[in-house]
Length: 84
Image 1 (cartoon, helix red, strand yellow):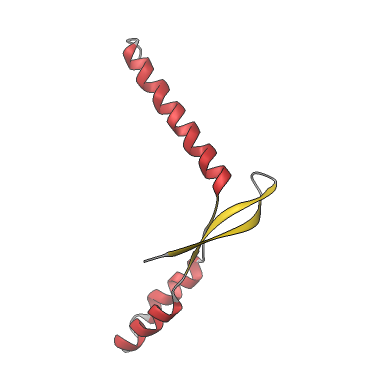
Image 2 (spheres, one colour):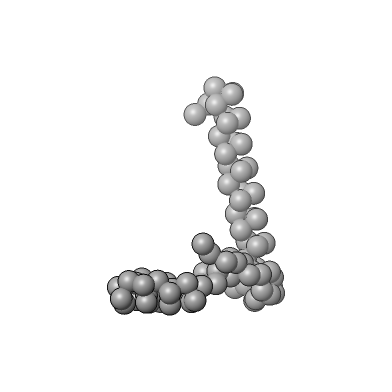
């Protein structure tokens, strides 16, 4: 289960400091799993560290979601008009 934290970070797309959701890795859980599997889980833990914690700008995500909803609505209205 991923834990998310909100931080203020400069967004390169918005060109402003905006709230970002940052996924945090639960290192305690990974340590327990590594010990329980006699080190086999270590490779998965390293992958989680290398892939990093993706940061999502809340304003960009909201804008992209709104654009997708408008495009979907436009497609549905086009079908009602008989256009494809």
